[in-house]
Length: 454
Image (tube, rainbow, N blue to C red; front, side, top):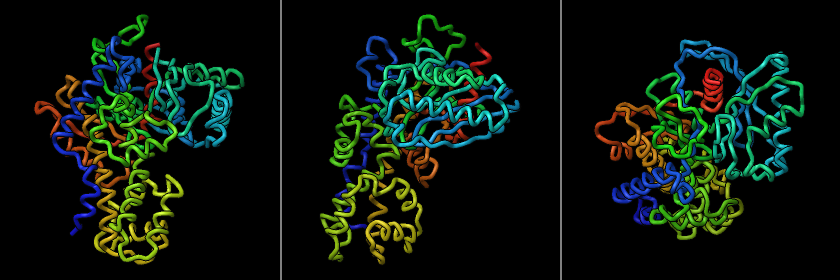
């Protein structure tokens, strides 16, 4: 039985039905604002059109390159589409050195082009003409299928000379500077678009793609008549277009202030992008561990945790040294732990504090703290997904999900569904499926669809 102190400590993370409904209403209003030309500038959720109109049929064939950049590593993939919803994938992971994450943009793109060339040579395809789908998982304003202007760097990147520029052109120029490979950049996409496309390749009812990993974002199928931002020269071939919601920025105008806690404010204050991506800071893997860390410090200081230890001050100091000392993956491990032994939780406590024999009571409290933080994150994601589902005219809708938080947390899916059942319209039927390599296979599928329509 948990004591009152820990429940009181975590009360601010527990969303009431009223708060859930209010966040939902504000989110829906923000999406509508992002889609309209007249209100787009003021909107936090920018709802950028992706210029992808065709969903895969499963019959696509051919060889396509995919490039996936969205963190400290990037992947190059050779995807062979074989029809009948079938595909084989060969891939290689390359590191992005820390100095390149903040160095001149031209150096970053030269590094990517060099790795592409090495990959193509390794697969003995140097003389082949290869269409490439580029998954670039940062906020971009698309002005065409293969033109995307970087709005802002996130996730620890800060290369000068890239914000406000077309990343498709920068990659194309880096490939051209080499002159040793025949690679054509035919599509730029966000990882959420890739997730949607990858899931739609396997399930024709997929209309929403969501990533809950290092970052948090969503893409969905919108009626083309509602999308004011499409370029006037764009040929509308379908009645639909995929929209990149960029919902991580929701809350930047104060819409979430009534549910944000003191811990959320401190996480934001100590981040490299203060006052930005506030929804993302409450839901994504980059920040959930930081939130738990701050709560643990407060719990130790208030003698809610480790009451009987005379080393409490040392424990609190150990947690204050590094904002990422409590890794987000610990949350998944702790919430999947077995009661009353708590082997994973005890191991984490030993690793963090050097405490060999944590009490069952302390293990339970730490699990409850993790549960409150992750449940709120999943509820917020569920609110956003419900808002998107309710915009789509189809009766049955599948949501494609990916990202380390969703993939590895034992209860994230259940927490999400619990919120969605309260908000999704009663005449709609929804399901959630796990994406198979959305940012890789999905990029190749966008390239395949793009090659068909070019």
